[in-house]
Image (cartoon, rainbow, N blue to C red):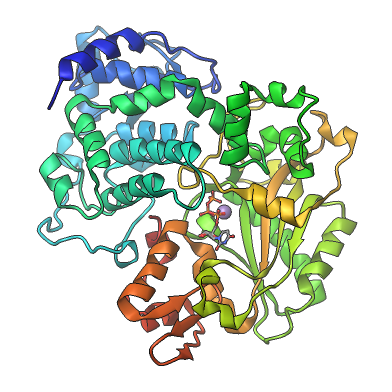
Length: 538
Ligand code: UTP
Ligand code: MN
């Protein structure tokens, strides 16, 4: 490829200077440099340090996570033996590069599972047998996209570029960010690791810019562009500021351009008139930037469900969003509330909120009324949601969390650690500021609540009410991913002459609505094979 010399010189300059604040003191990474160029090894070390990980240059008893690329445990032991190390210290994990890239992607050390551990011998590593000759379908909703796939090394870089593009432009015309997302989606759906650029060229939606990034990673092991973004303070500051509840890319960028760099810069500037949600976002910064675990989501679902049942027996409260797609962590909890009898859901949301408020479980809430208008399906705004809905912040009692079996070990979410941005690369910026500002919002939040001794953790919860007749569409819409929905809607429109929303499906040729009582019905109407929620992670 062109001009690799210039690139490599630059990497050598920057590789050593990136040691930053250690956010995860209980995780000490050691990256095995066998089967890896020095440039890639340097890059990976610098990347981890920039993300707040401690990286050991030398192997020793302090190492907790040993990372190797394309090596078996036998090969790693052979490598250590050559260095005079005959056995590893107890508790040290031998992990694949997938653990590393996913941890970088999620900006925290992810849990070590068997599938992320090295295997005894190379022969045990499964080789993809699927046909590579079959062309990949154009629409993401036609493919199977799982959380775990074969190309994290590329998709991590593309996700970062997508996030960065969103910070630069923000708003509806964000075509650059979308181009990166679409390229990443094609790689996520690939049945095997991509090994050459020609194959990438044959995949749908891989534009020129994404191809360059992929080529860099194939040739050098990393993307210089990604490295440059990480080296500058724009991306880091934008992550920090957009991590404030109620702050979207536009406000964050304005603050960055003003010269603000830290949360204290925002807190201490008397000329800024922060909105109520933004003030809470600052006060609860740490809580709201620590990922919500599945165990916590289950507790919140139970809390809401028990109030709902008291008010309207037989109603359903379903955990949707990323958790329904199999994620074990999320930035919020999305609960879809309905009742099998149409009409019985009316008035339920305000009644539930009153009960939750009565129990002092809400730190913040902002309601939006049901503005669904069936005639709007043929208009442009059909993609918007019009359900009765409440954005809230729950006060989740710490004693409830610690008593759950699945409570996370401290190494995953160490106390006192502020994780920047969100845990989810699928969600670079949400532009919440608009809707929250419009809705106002009420807070129940005392001075005492701001102290470190507060007995609860703030958790973002979205409560959505859907009438029975719209439930199947609402379930598809709120399960996501956002990009899967986007693709479904485009497919419906362009391939089937239908308008799909989270409320209905409308056939624009026959001029009729198509009722659905299950998600399978929705896919069936669209003549698409059914995809399980876990297969919608594009
Ligand atoms: P989220 O933003 O919560 O995403 O929206 P997520 O996939 O659950 O990710 P994390 O884990 O919380 O970060 C959940 C689903 O709800 C839909 C989105 O399209 C997504 O599929 N949604 C969200 C809407 O339909 N309308 C909205 O206004 C917001
Ligand atoms: Mn969610």
